[in-house]
Amino acid sequence: MERQGNTIKNAEQKREAVVLNPSHAGQDFPHFWEKTFGSCHASITLAEDWRKDVDSMKKIVDIQYIRFHGIFDKETGFYGGEDDNGNLILNFTRIDQIYDGLIARGIRPFVELSFMPTAMADDIEGAVHPFKYHPIVAPPKDPVKWYQLIQRFIKHLAERYGVEELSQWYFEVWHEPNIDFLAGADDAAKQQAYFMMYDLAAHAVKSVNSKLPVGGPATAMAAWIPAFIEHCAVNNVPVDFVSTHIYPNDLPVNVFGKELDISQKDMVALAAKKVYDEVKASAKPDLPIFWTEFNAGFDNGQTDLAYVGPWLAQTIARCDGLAEHMAYWTFTDNFFEEGGVFPRPFYNGFGLIATGSIPKAPFNAFKLLHLLGERRLPVDSDNAIFTRRNDGTLVLALWNYVAPKTHGESLTYDISLENPHKTNGLACVHVVDAKHGCPLAAWDAMGRPDFPTPDQQQMLRRAAQLPPARVIALTDGKLSVVAEPDALIVIQFIDTEVK
Image 1 (cartoon, rainbow, N blue to C red):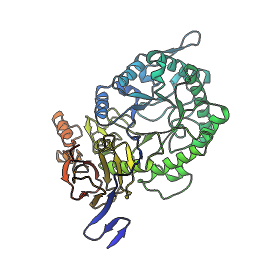
Image 2 (image 1 turned 180 degrees about the horizontal axis):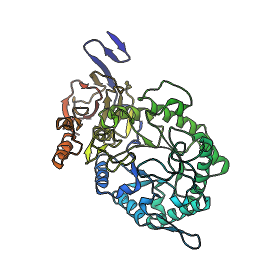
Image 3 (image 1 turned 120 degrees about the horizontal axis):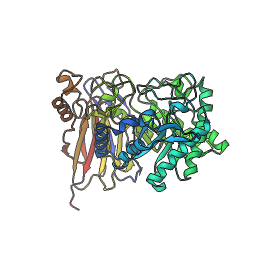
Image 4 (image 1 turned 90 degrees about the vertical axis):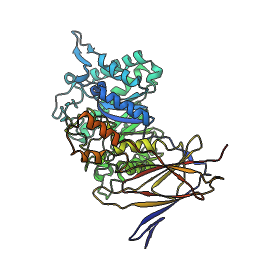
Protein backbone atom coordinates (compact mmCIF):
# COMPACT_ATOMS: atom_id res chain seq x y z
CA MET A 1 0.00 0.00 0.00
CA GLU A 2 1.21 3.51 -0.84
CA ARG A 3 0.06 6.73 0.74
CA GLN A 4 0.41 10.03 -1.17
CA GLY A 5 -0.92 12.95 0.89
CA ASN A 6 -4.50 12.06 1.68
CA THR A 7 -4.67 9.56 -1.18
CA ILE A 8 -4.33 5.82 -0.48
CA LYS A 9 -3.46 3.58 -3.43
CA ASN A 10 -3.21 -0.17 -3.74
CA ALA A 11 -3.79 -2.73 -6.42
CA GLU A 12 -7.57 -2.66 -5.88
CA GLN A 13 -8.54 0.94 -5.26
CA LYS A 14 -7.59 4.56 -5.21
CA ARG A 15 -9.19 6.65 -2.50
CA GLU A 16 -8.87 10.15 -1.14
CA ALA A 17 -10.27 11.52 2.11
CA VAL A 18 -11.72 15.02 1.88
CA VAL A 19 -12.59 16.80 5.13
CA LEU A 20 -14.87 19.84 4.93
CA ASN A 21 -15.26 22.51 7.61
CA PRO A 22 -18.30 24.68 6.77
CA SER A 23 -17.80 26.95 9.77
CA HIS A 24 -14.87 28.77 8.14
CA ALA A 25 -15.63 32.32 6.98
CA GLY A 26 -13.83 31.80 3.67
CA GLN A 27 -12.91 34.46 1.12
CA ASP A 28 -14.55 36.08 -1.88
CA PHE A 29 -14.73 33.79 -4.88
CA PRO A 30 -15.79 35.74 -7.98
CA HIS A 31 -16.57 33.48 -10.92
CA PHE A 32 -13.77 34.91 -13.05
CA TRP A 33 -13.83 31.98 -15.50
CA GLU A 34 -17.39 32.53 -16.72
CA LYS A 35 -17.61 36.31 -17.17
CA THR A 36 -15.95 36.57 -20.62
CA PHE A 37 -15.80 34.17 -23.55
CA GLY A 38 -14.04 34.28 -26.88
CA SER A 39 -15.44 33.75 -30.35
CA CYS A 40 -14.01 33.80 -33.88
CA HIS A 41 -14.33 37.00 -35.88
CA ALA A 42 -16.83 39.82 -35.97
CA SER A 43 -18.98 39.04 -38.98
CA ILE A 44 -20.03 35.59 -37.78
CA THR A 45 -21.84 37.14 -34.81
CA LEU A 46 -24.65 38.04 -37.20
CA ALA A 47 -25.39 34.36 -37.89
CA GLU A 48 -28.55 32.88 -36.40
CA ASP A 49 -26.88 29.71 -35.07
CA TRP A 50 -24.12 31.75 -33.42
CA ARG A 51 -26.71 33.84 -31.61
CA LYS A 52 -28.64 30.73 -30.58
CA ASP A 53 -25.47 29.42 -28.96
CA VAL A 54 -24.98 32.74 -27.14
CA ASP A 55 -28.46 32.28 -25.70
CA SER A 56 -27.56 28.72 -24.65
CA MET A 57 -24.46 29.98 -22.84
CA LYS A 58 -26.41 32.74 -21.14
CA LYS A 59 -28.70 30.12 -19.62
CA ILE A 60 -25.89 28.22 -17.88
CA VAL A 61 -23.30 30.82 -16.83
CA ASP A 62 -23.06 34.48 -15.88
CA ILE A 63 -21.58 35.52 -19.21
CA GLN A 64 -21.04 39.28 -19.33
CA TYR A 65 -18.64 39.85 -22.24
CA ILE A 66 -17.75 38.30 -25.59
CA ARG A 67 -14.50 39.03 -27.41
CA PHE A 68 -13.86 38.41 -31.10
CA HIS A 69 -11.37 39.45 -33.79
CA GLY A 70 -11.67 41.67 -36.80
CA ILE A 71 -14.22 44.41 -36.15
CA PHE A 72 -12.37 46.47 -38.82
CA ASP A 73 -12.10 43.61 -41.35
CA LYS A 74 -13.60 43.88 -44.83
CA GLU A 75 -16.50 41.53 -43.95
CA THR A 76 -18.02 44.18 -41.67
CA GLY A 77 -17.96 46.78 -44.43
CA PHE A 78 -16.60 49.32 -41.97
CA TYR A 79 -13.82 50.97 -43.96
CA GLY A 80 -14.80 52.68 -47.20
CA GLY A 81 -11.64 54.55 -48.12
CA GLU A 82 -11.20 58.34 -48.13
CA ASP A 83 -13.06 61.20 -49.72
CA ASP A 84 -11.46 63.83 -51.95
CA ASN A 85 -10.24 65.74 -48.90
CA GLY A 86 -8.57 62.71 -47.32
CA ASN A 87 -11.29 62.15 -44.71
CA LEU A 88 -12.07 58.55 -43.75
CA ILE A 89 -15.30 57.10 -45.13
CA LEU A 90 -16.69 54.74 -42.47
CA ASN A 91 -19.83 52.62 -42.56
CA PHE A 92 -21.30 51.65 -39.18
CA THR A 93 -24.27 49.59 -40.41
CA ARG A 94 -22.89 46.15 -39.52
CA ILE A 95 -20.92 47.46 -36.55
CA ASP A 96 -24.24 48.51 -35.05
CA GLN A 97 -25.89 45.18 -35.93
CA ILE A 98 -23.04 43.25 -34.31
CA TYR A 99 -23.03 45.17 -31.05
CA ASP A 100 -26.82 45.61 -30.88
CA GLY A 101 -27.12 41.81 -31.06
CA LEU A 102 -24.92 41.42 -27.98
CA ILE A 103 -26.54 44.22 -26.00
CA ALA A 104 -30.00 42.77 -26.71
CA ARG A 105 -28.84 39.60 -24.97
CA GLY A 106 -27.51 41.37 -21.89
CA ILE A 107 -23.89 40.90 -22.98
CA ARG A 108 -21.28 43.59 -23.58
CA PRO A 109 -18.45 43.49 -26.11
CA PHE A 110 -14.88 43.07 -24.97
CA VAL A 111 -13.73 45.05 -27.99
CA GLU A 112 -10.59 43.93 -29.77
CA LEU A 113 -9.45 46.84 -31.94
CA SER A 114 -8.35 44.85 -34.99
CA PHE A 115 -7.36 44.27 -37.78
CA MET A 116 -6.02 46.82 -40.28
CA PRO A 117 -8.18 47.87 -43.23
CA THR A 118 -6.32 46.83 -46.38
CA ALA A 119 -5.94 50.31 -47.80
CA MET A 120 -4.50 51.58 -44.51
CA ALA A 121 -1.91 48.81 -44.09
CA ASP A 122 1.80 49.20 -44.53
CA ASP A 123 2.95 47.13 -47.49
CA ILE A 124 5.34 44.78 -45.74
CA GLU A 125 5.95 41.06 -45.84
CA GLY A 126 3.49 39.01 -43.79
CA ALA A 127 0.69 41.56 -43.99
CA VAL A 128 -1.94 38.91 -44.90
CA HIS A 129 -2.57 36.31 -42.22
CA PRO A 130 -3.22 32.71 -43.37
CA PHE A 131 -6.51 32.32 -41.46
CA LYS A 132 -9.43 31.51 -43.77
CA TYR A 133 -10.77 35.05 -43.60
CA HIS A 134 -7.28 36.50 -44.24
CA PRO A 135 -7.07 39.40 -41.79
CA ILE A 136 -4.59 42.16 -42.60
CA VAL A 137 -2.07 42.21 -39.77
CA ALA A 138 0.30 44.99 -40.83
CA PRO A 139 0.76 48.23 -38.92
CA PRO A 140 -0.67 51.38 -40.50
CA LYS A 141 1.26 53.11 -43.25
CA ASP A 142 -0.06 56.43 -41.89
CA PRO A 143 -0.25 56.55 -38.07
CA VAL A 144 -2.51 59.65 -38.24
CA LYS A 145 -5.17 57.68 -40.11
CA TRP A 146 -5.01 54.90 -37.48
CA TYR A 147 -5.64 57.47 -34.75
CA GLN A 148 -8.52 58.97 -36.69
CA LEU A 149 -10.04 55.54 -37.35
CA ILE A 150 -10.04 54.63 -33.66
CA GLN A 151 -11.34 58.04 -32.59
CA ARG A 152 -14.20 57.99 -35.09
CA PHE A 153 -15.08 54.42 -34.14
CA ILE A 154 -15.20 55.16 -30.41
CA LYS A 155 -17.06 58.44 -30.94
CA HIS A 156 -19.78 56.63 -32.87
CA LEU A 157 -20.16 54.02 -30.14
CA ALA A 158 -20.41 56.72 -27.48
CA GLU A 159 -23.11 58.51 -29.45
CA ARG A 160 -25.07 55.30 -30.02
CA TYR A 161 -24.79 53.63 -26.61
CA GLY A 162 -23.86 56.50 -24.29
CA VAL A 163 -20.67 57.08 -22.35
CA GLU A 164 -21.98 55.47 -19.16
CA GLU A 165 -22.73 52.24 -21.01
CA LEU A 166 -19.47 52.40 -22.94
CA SER A 167 -17.50 52.88 -19.74
CA GLN A 168 -18.49 49.29 -18.87
CA TRP A 169 -16.97 47.91 -22.07
CA TYR A 170 -13.27 47.13 -22.49
CA PHE A 171 -11.15 48.25 -25.44
CA GLU A 172 -8.18 45.98 -26.13
CA VAL A 173 -5.70 47.13 -28.73
CA TRP A 174 -4.93 44.47 -31.37
CA HIS A 175 -4.35 40.73 -30.98
CA GLU A 176 -1.15 38.74 -30.34
CA PRO A 177 1.30 41.26 -31.82
CA ASN A 178 4.29 39.20 -30.69
CA ILE A 179 3.57 36.41 -33.17
CA ASP A 180 2.19 36.38 -36.73
CA PHE A 181 -0.74 38.68 -36.01
CA LEU A 182 1.49 41.70 -36.49
CA ALA A 183 3.82 41.80 -39.47
CA GLY A 184 7.40 42.79 -38.78
CA ALA A 185 10.99 41.73 -39.27
CA ASP A 186 11.55 40.45 -35.72
CA ASP A 187 10.25 40.67 -32.16
CA ALA A 188 11.85 44.06 -31.54
CA ALA A 189 10.33 45.55 -34.69
CA LYS A 190 6.92 44.15 -33.82
CA GLN A 191 7.08 45.53 -30.29
CA GLN A 192 8.07 48.97 -31.54
CA ALA A 193 5.23 48.95 -34.08
CA TYR A 194 2.76 47.72 -31.49
CA PHE A 195 3.69 50.39 -28.97
CA MET A 196 3.12 53.02 -31.66
CA MET A 197 -0.28 51.53 -32.50
CA TYR A 198 -1.22 51.15 -28.86
CA ASP A 199 -0.23 54.71 -27.93
CA LEU A 200 -2.31 56.20 -30.72
CA ALA A 201 -5.30 53.96 -30.07
CA ALA A 202 -5.23 54.53 -26.30
CA HIS A 203 -5.06 58.30 -26.70
CA ALA A 204 -7.84 58.14 -29.30
CA VAL A 205 -10.11 56.19 -26.94
CA LYS A 206 -9.47 58.61 -24.08
CA SER A 207 -10.00 61.62 -26.36
CA VAL A 208 -13.66 60.62 -26.60
CA ASN A 209 -14.01 60.15 -22.85
CA SER A 210 -11.51 59.47 -20.09
CA LYS A 211 -13.86 56.92 -18.48
CA LEU A 212 -13.46 54.40 -21.30
CA PRO A 213 -11.15 51.49 -20.31
CA VAL A 214 -8.30 50.69 -22.70
CA GLY A 215 -5.49 48.15 -22.42
CA GLY A 216 -3.20 45.59 -24.02
CA PRO A 217 -0.86 44.14 -25.15
CA ALA A 218 -3.07 41.09 -25.92
CA THR A 219 0.05 39.00 -26.48
CA ALA A 220 0.36 35.28 -27.03
CA MET A 221 2.28 33.20 -24.48
CA ALA A 222 2.08 35.71 -21.61
CA ALA A 223 4.66 37.94 -23.31
CA TRP A 224 5.69 41.60 -23.08
CA ILE A 225 3.85 42.48 -19.85
CA PRO A 226 6.76 44.18 -18.00
CA ALA A 227 7.90 46.00 -21.15
CA PHE A 228 4.36 47.13 -21.96
CA ILE A 229 3.68 48.52 -18.50
CA GLU A 230 7.07 50.23 -18.39
CA HIS A 231 6.43 51.80 -21.78
CA CYS A 232 3.05 53.15 -20.66
CA ALA A 233 4.44 54.45 -17.38
CA VAL A 234 7.52 56.16 -18.85
CA ASN A 235 5.61 57.73 -21.73
CA ASN A 236 2.45 58.59 -19.80
CA VAL A 237 0.29 56.44 -22.07
CA PRO A 238 -3.21 55.58 -20.79
CA VAL A 239 -3.65 51.99 -19.65
CA ASP A 240 -6.48 50.59 -17.53
CA PHE A 241 -5.77 46.85 -17.74
CA VAL A 242 -3.29 44.35 -19.11
CA SER A 243 -4.27 41.41 -21.26
CA THR A 244 -2.49 38.36 -22.59
CA HIS A 245 -3.09 34.74 -23.65
CA ILE A 246 -1.90 31.27 -22.66
CA TYR A 247 -2.55 27.69 -23.76
CA PRO A 248 -1.42 24.44 -22.09
CA ASN A 249 0.51 23.50 -25.23
CA ASP A 250 2.60 26.67 -25.30
CA LEU A 251 6.30 25.91 -24.98
CA PRO A 252 7.85 26.82 -21.61
CA VAL A 253 10.82 28.46 -23.36
CA ASN A 254 8.39 30.89 -25.02
CA VAL A 255 6.44 31.60 -21.85
CA PHE A 256 9.18 31.60 -19.22
CA GLY A 257 12.29 32.22 -21.33
CA LYS A 258 13.93 28.89 -20.55
CA GLU A 259 13.50 25.17 -20.99
CA LEU A 260 11.32 23.75 -18.23
CA ASP A 261 9.37 20.55 -17.72
CA ILE A 262 5.82 21.88 -17.32
CA SER A 263 2.76 19.70 -17.78
CA GLN A 264 -0.42 20.76 -19.54
CA LYS A 265 -2.14 20.66 -16.16
CA ASP A 266 0.23 23.30 -14.80
CA MET A 267 1.00 25.65 -17.69
CA VAL A 268 -1.94 28.07 -17.44
CA ALA A 269 -1.75 28.39 -13.65
CA LEU A 270 2.01 28.97 -13.67
CA ALA A 271 1.71 31.56 -16.43
CA ALA A 272 -1.07 33.31 -14.50
CA LYS A 273 1.19 33.51 -11.44
CA LYS A 274 4.08 34.81 -13.57
CA VAL A 275 2.01 37.65 -15.01
CA TYR A 276 0.47 38.46 -11.63
CA ASP A 277 3.93 38.79 -10.12
CA GLU A 278 5.11 40.90 -13.06
CA VAL A 279 2.23 43.33 -12.65
CA LYS A 280 2.73 43.57 -8.89
CA ALA A 281 6.43 44.34 -9.41
CA SER A 282 5.69 47.02 -12.02
CA ALA A 283 5.15 50.76 -11.86
CA LYS A 284 1.39 50.08 -12.05
CA PRO A 285 0.86 47.22 -9.58
CA ASP A 286 -2.93 47.58 -9.35
CA LEU A 287 -3.72 47.07 -13.02
CA PRO A 288 -6.43 44.43 -13.54
CA ILE A 289 -5.30 41.35 -15.46
CA PHE A 290 -7.45 39.84 -18.21
CA TRP A 291 -6.57 36.54 -19.85
CA THR A 292 -8.47 37.18 -23.06
CA GLU A 293 -7.72 33.72 -24.44
CA PHE A 294 -7.11 30.36 -22.81
CA ASN A 295 -8.47 26.84 -23.08
CA ALA A 296 -7.63 23.22 -22.27
CA GLY A 297 -5.27 22.63 -25.19
CA PHE A 298 -5.25 22.59 -28.96
CA ASP A 299 -4.12 19.03 -29.69
CA ASN A 300 -5.38 15.47 -29.18
CA GLY A 301 -9.00 16.55 -29.51
CA GLN A 302 -8.99 17.60 -25.86
CA THR A 303 -11.51 20.40 -26.28
CA ASP A 304 -14.16 17.88 -27.38
CA LEU A 305 -13.68 15.67 -24.32
CA ALA A 306 -14.81 15.37 -20.72
CA TYR A 307 -11.11 15.98 -19.96
CA VAL A 308 -11.85 19.71 -19.98
CA GLY A 309 -13.91 19.47 -16.77
CA PRO A 310 -11.11 18.35 -14.42
CA TRP A 311 -8.56 20.48 -16.24
CA LEU A 312 -10.74 23.57 -15.95
CA ALA A 313 -11.58 23.00 -12.28
CA GLN A 314 -7.89 22.50 -11.46
CA THR A 315 -7.02 25.69 -13.32
CA ILE A 316 -9.76 27.69 -11.60
CA ALA A 317 -8.58 26.49 -8.20
CA ARG A 318 -5.03 27.68 -8.87
CA CYS A 319 -5.81 30.92 -10.75
CA ASP A 320 -8.22 32.21 -8.11
CA GLY A 321 -7.10 35.72 -7.17
CA LEU A 322 -4.64 36.04 -10.07
CA ALA A 323 -6.91 37.56 -12.71
CA GLU A 324 -10.01 39.66 -13.16
CA HIS A 325 -11.44 37.53 -15.98
CA MET A 326 -10.27 34.48 -17.92
CA ALA A 327 -11.93 34.19 -21.33
CA TYR A 328 -12.28 30.62 -22.60
CA TRP A 329 -11.53 30.33 -26.32
CA THR A 330 -14.20 29.64 -27.54
CA PHE A 331 -17.83 29.15 -26.57
CA THR A 332 -19.03 27.77 -29.94
CA ASP A 333 -17.76 26.02 -33.05
CA ASN A 334 -20.62 27.41 -35.13
CA PHE A 335 -18.91 29.48 -37.87
CA PHE A 336 -15.49 29.17 -36.22
CA GLU A 337 -13.45 29.87 -39.33
CA GLU A 338 -9.77 30.10 -38.45
CA GLY A 339 -8.82 26.98 -40.37
CA GLY A 340 -11.88 26.77 -42.59
CA VAL A 341 -15.31 25.25 -42.25
CA PHE A 342 -15.38 22.26 -39.88
CA PRO A 343 -15.85 18.96 -41.81
CA ARG A 344 -17.70 17.22 -38.96
CA PRO A 345 -19.25 18.18 -35.60
CA PHE A 346 -16.40 16.85 -33.44
CA TYR A 347 -13.10 17.93 -34.92
CA ASN A 348 -11.02 19.26 -32.05
CA GLY A 349 -12.92 22.51 -32.30
CA PHE A 350 -12.19 24.93 -29.48
CA GLY A 351 -15.88 25.54 -28.77
CA LEU A 352 -17.97 24.36 -25.85
CA ILE A 353 -20.78 23.80 -28.36
CA ALA A 354 -20.27 21.77 -31.53
CA THR A 355 -21.59 22.75 -34.94
CA GLY A 356 -25.30 22.05 -34.94
CA SER A 357 -25.72 23.58 -31.48
CA ILE A 358 -24.68 20.32 -29.83
CA PRO A 359 -23.33 20.90 -26.30
CA LYS A 360 -20.06 19.13 -25.57
CA ALA A 361 -18.98 17.74 -22.20
CA PRO A 362 -16.97 20.97 -21.56
CA PHE A 363 -20.22 22.95 -21.90
CA ASN A 364 -21.65 20.85 -19.07
CA ALA A 365 -18.50 21.34 -17.03
CA PHE A 366 -19.08 25.09 -17.15
CA LYS A 367 -22.72 24.48 -16.25
CA LEU A 368 -21.79 22.54 -13.12
CA LEU A 369 -19.00 24.88 -12.03
CA HIS A 370 -21.50 27.72 -12.16
CA LEU A 371 -23.14 26.05 -9.13
CA LEU A 372 -20.14 26.94 -6.98
CA GLY A 373 -20.69 29.61 -4.36
CA GLU A 374 -19.46 33.14 -3.91
CA ARG A 375 -17.25 32.32 -0.90
CA ARG A 376 -14.37 29.86 -1.13
CA LEU A 377 -13.69 27.78 1.96
CA PRO A 378 -10.48 25.88 2.77
CA VAL A 379 -10.32 22.19 1.86
CA ASP A 380 -7.52 19.70 2.43
CA SER A 381 -7.28 18.48 -1.17
CA ASP A 382 -5.56 19.61 -4.35
CA ASN A 383 -8.49 18.14 -6.30
CA ALA A 384 -11.33 20.08 -4.74
CA ILE A 385 -12.97 23.49 -4.48
CA PHE A 386 -15.27 24.01 -1.48
CA THR A 387 -17.61 26.99 -1.46
CA ARG A 388 -20.62 28.59 0.19
CA ARG A 389 -23.31 30.32 -1.82
CA ASN A 390 -24.99 33.51 -0.70
CA ASP A 391 -28.08 31.52 0.29
CA GLY A 392 -25.93 29.38 2.61
CA THR A 393 -25.76 26.29 0.37
CA LEU A 394 -22.43 24.46 0.54
CA VAL A 395 -21.08 23.33 -2.84
CA LEU A 396 -18.07 21.08 -3.42
CA ALA A 397 -16.32 20.39 -6.74
CA LEU A 398 -14.12 17.29 -7.06
CA TRP A 399 -12.30 15.92 -10.08
CA ASN A 400 -10.20 13.06 -11.35
CA TYR A 401 -7.67 14.59 -13.73
CA VAL A 402 -5.89 12.29 -16.18
CA ALA A 403 -3.07 13.68 -18.31
CA PRO A 404 -3.51 13.56 -22.10
CA LYS A 405 -2.38 10.36 -23.81
CA THR A 406 -2.43 8.45 -20.52
CA HIS A 407 -4.88 6.03 -18.92
CA GLY A 408 -6.36 6.74 -15.53
CA GLU A 409 -8.28 4.81 -12.92
CA SER A 410 -11.34 5.55 -10.89
CA LEU A 411 -10.92 7.52 -7.67
CA THR A 412 -13.19 7.21 -4.64
CA TYR A 413 -13.63 10.32 -2.52
CA ASP A 414 -14.54 9.73 1.14
CA ILE A 415 -16.07 13.03 2.20
CA SER A 416 -16.52 14.10 5.82
CA LEU A 417 -18.52 17.20 6.66
CA GLU A 418 -17.31 18.44 10.04
CA ASN A 419 -19.83 19.94 12.46
CA PRO A 420 -22.72 18.54 10.43
CA HIS A 421 -26.15 20.02 10.74
CA LYS A 422 -28.50 18.70 13.42
CA THR A 423 -29.96 16.43 10.79
CA ASN A 424 -27.70 14.49 8.49
CA GLY A 425 -28.91 16.35 5.42
CA LEU A 426 -28.76 15.45 1.76
CA ALA A 427 -26.24 15.69 -1.04
CA CYS A 428 -27.16 16.33 -4.70
CA VAL A 429 -24.37 14.81 -6.79
CA HIS A 430 -23.85 16.03 -10.38
CA VAL A 431 -21.37 14.35 -12.74
CA VAL A 432 -19.78 15.14 -16.10
CA ASP A 433 -17.60 12.43 -17.58
CA ALA A 434 -17.39 10.29 -20.72
CA LYS A 435 -20.74 8.66 -19.87
CA HIS A 436 -22.61 11.62 -18.41
CA GLY A 437 -23.27 14.82 -20.36
CA CYS A 438 -21.00 13.85 -23.26
CA PRO A 439 -22.42 13.22 -26.77
CA LEU A 440 -19.36 11.46 -28.21
CA ALA A 441 -20.55 7.92 -27.46
CA ALA A 442 -23.84 8.62 -29.24
CA TRP A 443 -21.92 10.00 -32.22
CA ASP A 444 -19.78 6.85 -32.29
CA ALA A 445 -22.90 4.67 -32.11
CA MET A 446 -24.41 6.34 -35.18
CA GLY A 447 -21.19 5.76 -37.16
CA ARG A 448 -19.56 9.17 -36.62
CA PRO A 449 -21.40 10.91 -39.49
CA ASP A 450 -19.66 13.98 -40.86
CA PHE A 451 -22.98 15.69 -41.54
CA PRO A 452 -25.60 14.47 -39.07
CA THR A 453 -29.20 14.74 -40.21
CA PRO A 454 -31.54 17.00 -38.21
CA ASP A 455 -32.84 13.90 -36.39
CA GLN A 456 -29.29 12.78 -35.59
CA GLN A 457 -28.41 16.27 -34.35
CA GLN A 458 -31.41 16.13 -32.06
CA MET A 459 -30.25 12.74 -30.76
CA LEU A 460 -26.80 14.18 -30.07
CA ARG A 461 -28.28 17.15 -28.23
CA ARG A 462 -30.30 14.74 -26.08
CA ALA A 463 -27.22 12.61 -25.41
CA ALA A 464 -25.41 15.76 -24.27
CA GLN A 465 -27.99 16.55 -21.60
CA LEU A 466 -26.82 16.10 -18.04
CA PRO A 467 -28.70 13.42 -16.13
CA PRO A 468 -30.56 14.50 -13.01
CA ALA A 469 -28.52 14.82 -9.86
CA ARG A 470 -28.21 11.73 -7.69
CA VAL A 471 -29.57 12.43 -4.19
CA ILE A 472 -27.66 10.80 -1.32
CA ALA A 473 -28.60 10.93 2.35
CA LEU A 474 -25.61 11.77 4.54
CA THR A 475 -24.71 9.50 7.40
CA ASP A 476 -23.04 11.37 10.26
CA GLY A 477 -22.02 14.01 7.73
CA LYS A 478 -20.27 11.47 5.53
CA LEU A 479 -20.61 10.15 2.00
CA SER A 480 -18.45 8.54 -0.66
CA VAL A 481 -18.50 9.18 -4.40
CA VAL A 482 -16.60 7.56 -7.25
CA ALA A 483 -14.98 9.74 -9.90
CA GLU A 484 -14.17 7.94 -13.13
CA PRO A 485 -11.15 9.11 -15.15
CA ASP A 486 -11.70 12.67 -16.41
CA ALA A 487 -14.77 13.08 -14.22
CA LEU A 488 -15.90 16.36 -12.72
CA ILE A 489 -18.26 16.01 -9.75
CA VAL A 490 -20.14 18.89 -8.16
CA ILE A 491 -22.03 18.26 -4.90
CA GLN A 492 -24.65 20.53 -3.36
CA PHE A 493 -25.27 19.92 0.33
CA ILE A 494 -28.82 20.47 1.56
CA ASP A 495 -29.60 21.22 5.20
CA THR A 496 -32.93 19.47 5.76
CA GLU A 497 -33.62 21.12 9.10
CA VAL A 498 -36.83 23.19 9.06
CA LYS A 499 -35.97 26.82 9.66
